[in-house]
Length: 131
Image (cartoon, rainbow, N blue to C red; front, top):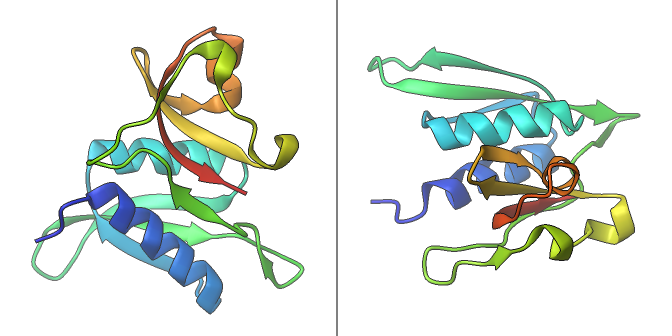
């Protein structure tokens, strides 16, 4: 049994990207779907789609993006974990690699990128960092 499905999702994306795969699949959840939407909007993945596997379980298929043969995602890590949640206010949202990377936050208005949360003056739980 997987105790942290979000971390598993991020690890699948990170491993597939490092292996040079075109896509990776993960079990479906609404939070994972929101993270995929943010990664696509920020330009870290090419696309994503919802589907079903052979046993008709819902899945999310992430189509990875490569620039000049190199993966668009150089690093992807889980910040807030089930055993240690990390919360931040809007003014204290950290910049990843001095603004070259991004982060995903869970706010009272749903999942959004760190830049969007700063613009809307919202704080929340830092889900992950990506660069």
